[in-house]
Amino acid sequence: MNHSALDKWFVEINDEEEEFPSIVEVLEFLKSVENLETCKIWVGKDGGKRPWWHRLFGLQKRFVDSLFALEWYNQIANLIFHDENWSEYRAIDQDNPISANEHDRLKVAQGEKIAPSNEECISKHRALTAVREYLITNERPDWLVYNFVE
Picture 1 (spheres, rainbow, N blue to C red):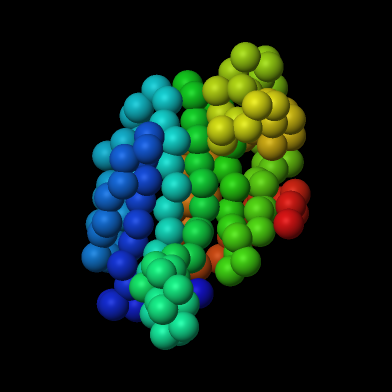
Picture 2 (cartoon, rainbow, N blue to C red; picture 1 turned 135 degrees about the vertical axis):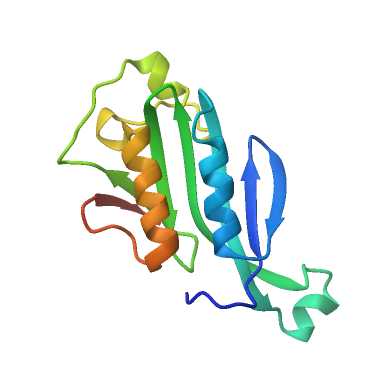
């Protein structure tokens, strides 16, 4: 996925949707919410026009590429990157592991009923650093490791 001046960016924050015309505005928006105690963010971008036969059957006119989902509570975060098939790459920070109780891990469960493992919880600061790096470089940070989930 390459970034261009024609990209349209979609951000869902705490179930409210926003659209941005540039990556710079997405980065500024992320900076504006980083002091929230709790937050759930999904970021995607316009993936291009769907074929005519998709539109004929009433599907959306354009594809949406999911980039990542990030949820934090206090200083604990859960970060999931997506690929072009919306497969999940759950971030693990082996260099700076954290330990969180089950109550706090449930707060960052990305809508799931089961708390993520301690391994899949990282510090909020490192998670925000990772998504900024990803948005700028278009590459998942190599200082994290990932649990792949199809």
